[in-house]
Image 1: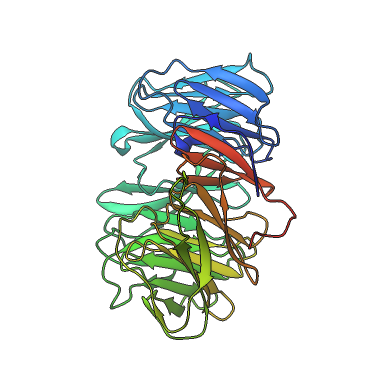
Image 2: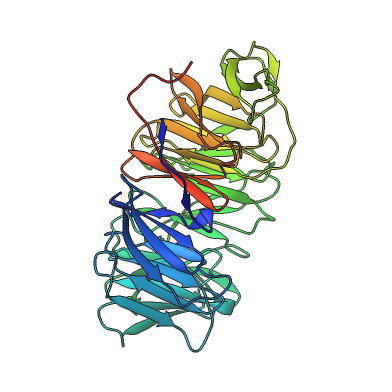
Length: 431
């Protein structure tokens, strides 16, 4: 793995690659800097926003990569920029209610904003500045979920003390269908990859999940008797064959989209007795003059006991690009990354680090898992090739975030106030 020089950024959560992979946009205080992803030394555009502290609070690219918006919710303002036309600009302000969230529509020609107190969802057009449409009483917590082909948007709404999902056409934003929910306070929803079903889940105090088809019929209500608290994560497999529901107890309930019944319950446990690859990070002897701590991964002897506890930084559940693998990190064992084979629902690998995992993400194009723990290293796991770590040349960098380029050629490695580009080479992984 090769690393670029370090560059400034103000908020690791705001670093975003354009969907076509050409650029990476980062916020530096009140400025938005767009760099070439292959050669980050080359600055493509710099936009100066009118925001004051806390400056830029959201950055998001349009699907066609033509536009990128910045948002300052403290000032109730969203600005849209065109990196290939630095003279063009669009400012969005809501004089009635403060803007608290923004999202692009799939056509890249409209920006959706949620107002405070869930009063309304506003749809702003980049073509006609006077055109504005509204969706009343949206639930910002549950947000909006777009149909895979972008033709429809599912918006969680509440009125008359009941939750609904309004299905709207993204062409003219008229209501196409309204789906009633039997939830106390819907917290989220996900459209299936085939666009035929919507999964919605209830408040965090109750593990209640509803699966509806687009006609409004409830296909299945899921409420495991021993689930405890509610749904924390909901992830569809890329093929739509499975949907994984992660609870606050750390267990993962895997549902089949054919029967809408659980086909497996994956429960990470600290005692490992079955044969599997367990990679443990160990610290190497440190020289007195050394400026950094060096570590490596060793295979543990089975049976073994994994360490528990520690400060949790990240809860992660994510399918690999082809859907054959599933990884998870839960807060009861924040130093452990679990990888399962989806076909057999068996553990493929367990990776234990010295420090809690802060970020864990799959490559968007191949089964390569990258994670970081706040050390000056990037960790990489590949099936049948083991787990390796790559040290960043600057020992003072504490990697707290990783963002993949959508084309899979590299990633942005993020630290406090700095970032570097990392590129996976064809060379053999280090020993």
